[in-house]
Image 1 (cartoon, rainbow, N blue to C red):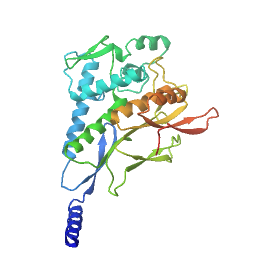
Image 2 (image 1 turned 135 degrees about the horizontal axis):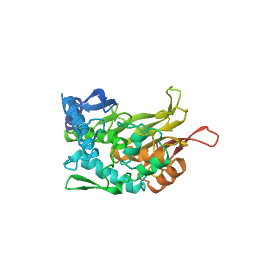
Image 3 (image 1 turned 90 degrees about the vertical axis):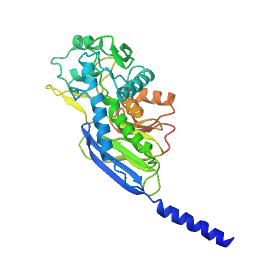
Image 4 (image 1 turned 120 degrees about the horizontal axis):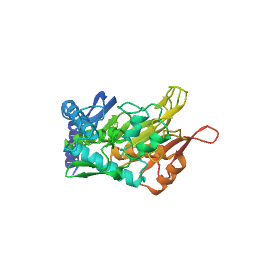
Length: 328
């Protein structure tokens, strides 16, 4: 009996040693930001070329900053474009979040993003209420559809902008690459949006930190979070703003109902879920547009989402809020 036990122990120890995975790190730049990928692999897999190919393919499909991309051609009125699986999935995810947020999240806001000077196209000078009302005619995801892999628009002026979900989606596609190659422990981060599976090299859940919204450029952290096969995305308007000639500050989150970019008491929204990173990316954007009170109400109705919010109280002091299911 002792002999059998010793053999079993030896086999287990030998197997553990043989199966020991090493931490691999890939870092670089993509879609106007940085990325950091960490994964555990016991083989000499080289994923860099495949990741580069994925980035190029997704950009060719959904980047408004590439004039020849599918989305750019569609925005210019080309109705003959047959979209690929990347565009189709982003479109369907966007439609779902649009409906759940009652239009607060809306990728057809692109024409307003450009008008306010936050997009790839030229802004509109002397933007007034009449011009904004006119542009609102071309906003609304209920005015577009996807039929036989071709986009149909109620108005040719409708302009898609998937940037609010794009980073998270690219994170997902790279994450799926690892899963297809039997990599069970990884963390993909692009511009702060993260998808994590399994554990890190120490055998514990991947741990990340959420930054405080410091306008002075300094860095400090509000909290740390362990991701248990989850995705996280953070949206904040405290650093992304445009100052006009008269000194007014306009944030990058645009109200899809009014057409205006305005200040919000919600400074940062981090959303966590076991769903795709693209989903939490979209929800985080929507929460920012809602403001603190409406964001709280939305989270109470959507318990599948965990959230950490940083907001300014009535005295202008920074406060934090955790959803009831936030257990990190």
